Length: 294
Ligand code: BMA
Image (cartoon, rainbow, N blue to C red):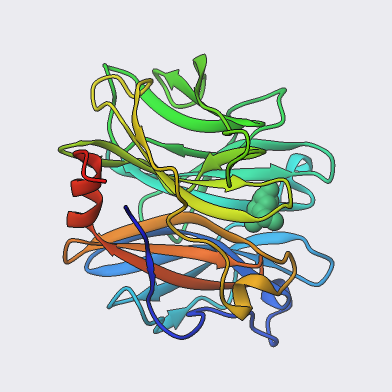
């Protein structure tokens, strides 16, 4: 069974009182390796609860040594007047591509921005129009000749396909909540799918009927990611510590990104929508499970 271990005693990133835009909370970070550093693109909330995206850098993947004083993405368009939220970043076709949630106070929709350096972002606008949708990320390569993303039309996880990254079609359900289990009410993707010899490893969140957010794992067929090959019954991480149980939203562990270093999966997650923490697992254990070990 796959179970993540908390990396250390507490959060690695907390709100900064001196910056109004990240005064209230920092959480739900995308994670990308670049030039030997890990770049965390994190959601930051100000006091009225408008979200922006901040950037923090870690050379060793565990300790933050640099944090930008200004957000790298902030609301510009009426469709995101209440915030740009929950970024997931994939390096695809030579550029970094971020899918994020554009929130206007009523509608939340999936929007895209692109970058060459993770600092300067070009906006591409909403890519899944006319629907309440979030929790989206791109696969890191074309699948069967097309670009592919996982997204979330509640309560299910869905796939969509595209030839230009802007127009998406062939929407189909990938996975559903499981009645009576920890992921019984809603599910949604965490970070981008991970390409492994055993299939696409997908980390996701599940919500139960008490509103508790946990992290789970499934594997998709490499050639045909519509096929869920395995899905673990037990969560891989659930709220246990004080900072996961208490905060702006109690009992939440919510991830938008991970990196793999020294054959270890390093998962970055928002705890109680307030701070960012890390949990890890050797990739060997994940691949053993993906191969069918109990
Ligand atoms: C989801 C998203 C996340 C948040 C989670 C728990 O719907 O809005 O940003 O972390 O709820 O509150």
